[in-house]
Image (tube, rainbow, N blue to C red; front, side):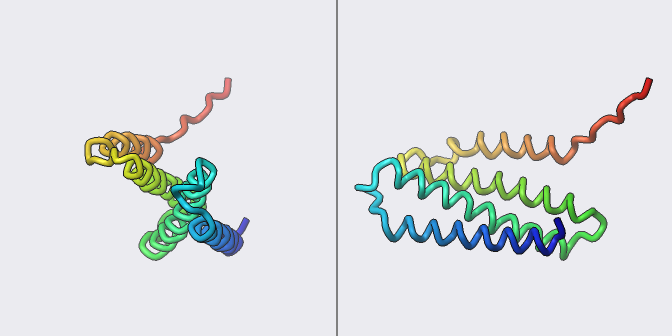
Amino acid sequence: MSLKAYILLMLLGTAACLSAFLAVIYFFEPTYGGILALVLFYTSLFLTLVGIISLLGLLIRIIFTRNKLIFKKVVTSFRQAVWFALIINIGLLLKSFNLFYWWSLAPLIFAMALLELFFMSYRPRPKLKI
């Protein structure tokens, strides 16, 4: 898949997720919608955030870094978009249950930072041929 095709598909997918998110906000009442409305809200928000953050991260990487392969930029921006979207979604979920404090979100941010450090430093070992 070329970079233009990836960007076009991500833009279309993000637009679809954004329209689904806006439809959930418009058509469902949060207090009367039940669990289905909440699942649809958080899922559409997560997918919208992943698309937006991934495209913005890829754009920033293309502008400021020129030494990496484009595939590595795409993978890195998508992975980090998933981390940021998870942090935002979990923060909003904690806020909806009145459990949002800095000490409740700090371990999650720390764990995701460690996981991202692992992915950034991981180098597969070459296989030995015997």
